[in-house]
Length: 160
Image (cartoon, rainbow, N blue to C red; front, side, top):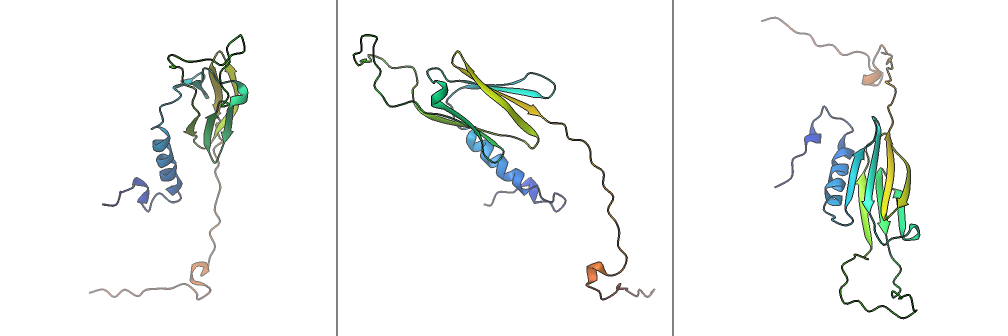
């Protein structure tokens, strides 16, 4: 059965991209690692905090791809060395060291201000820009602009 969309209404012109954004957001929410928080830190300011323990700044990338904030982490595949220079043998390895990609779909008008890494937490600061309301008058042309120069059409209605 085909899926019905609320954006199929003829009154919602040009909103079909919202449906694609919702699909991307639902796919991104299925990811579980790394854990994150989203905080409102001001009237128009947001902060995303990701727990990325064990990752350095060189292991992380933050990019904006078509209104989608993408955070990627990839550790180098080198064996862990102990302080004496010998390779570490793990009896239990519970600290995650796998690569990840976490995506956040951003609404129009959300700007990424910057990111910083502190004590295993990656902070990404965002700001919602407040657009100025725009009012624009549309000139109404006379004549048959919609009729390709054939002149206005009339319909004669005869009373019963």
